[in-house]
Image (cartoon, rainbow, N blue to C red; front, side):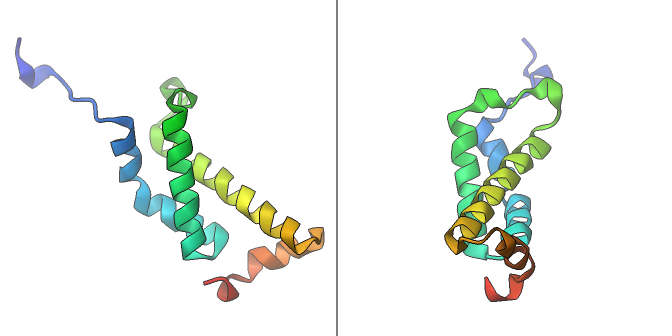
Length: 102
């Protein structure tokens, strides 16, 4: 067998790790907080690794799917902020006040 024609498949977790920088940038833009962004990305990686079958290659590439997982985790965290604040109208302020969350 000629090994030159065999494509090595990288482990799922390694592929996700390749997206860490971009995922962190996305999460930081959404959350306006680097520490929360790092937690959101880590949570998204754990979630993806726990349920790798949630990714279906026939529906698209891994990177956009994973960024969607990250985005959804960030939205969950924003909802939590809103709930802690106890005021539905406070969410736009939470979203626009990036300077005070860094």
